[in-house]
Amino acid sequence: MTQFSVEGRVACVTGASSGIGRAAASLLASAGAHVVGVARRQAELEAWSDASEGETAVVVADLADRGGFSGVAAAVAAPFGAPEILVNAAGINTRQKADDVTPEGWDVTLNLNLAAPFFLAQALVPGMRERGWGRIVNFASLQSRRAFAGGIAYGASKGGVEQLTRAMAEAWSAHGITANALAPGFFPTELTGPVFADAALAERNAAQTCIGRNGELSDLHGPLLFFCSDASSYVTGQVLFVDGGFTAK
Image 1 (cartoon, rainbow, N blue to C red):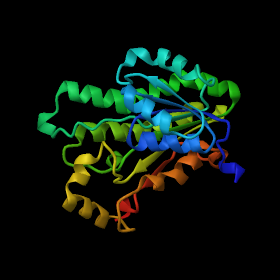
Image 2 (cartoon, rainbow, N blue to C red):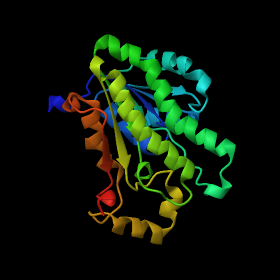
Image 3 (cartoon, rainbow, N blue to C red):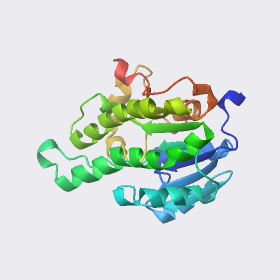
């Protein structure tokens, strides 16, 4: 349906070198968007671009560095024009227990997971406002609402993402720019590698869902296209848990 189309749209996806970010960037490119992937690791980012369908470009940047967002925004706009879609998928989880959290671990987690989505959006919103159309998709988490062991910094950042999403909607939706968030359950990615390396833990997580299994990256395709397209034009400030019913039990 054309309502769900992103054909010809310009999209920026952070964290495109691996995991959910890479899957999101590949999906949008295969759906006809012009996609700029942003990540720190150049080799992995270029490998994503080479393997992708459609029009893609890459920008190598460390989004945990708050001083570089104007430069990142300019670099992202160079290949195809100012982005109309921003998917903030870059993230980090240091998995430090509360007693072991360091200022350095706290800062890099909050900078990448919470500050970067805001400041990059702030830098790209003027182009969206000029068009009267924009889509911002953040990534929240089960830990936006649930406390997990070793997740105090990560959970604080993802709880912040949920409220940030609502605040973005309040600030910008009157200009045709919606802001929503996806909150994935357990999906096999580089970030969740330690979880899936423990077969018993992965099995317990699957059993906690209503559906009875952990997520597959393809499970995010429909929700992401919904939030990135005209199909969600009257939906803003919302968090959609794509977790197989994990939070329902």
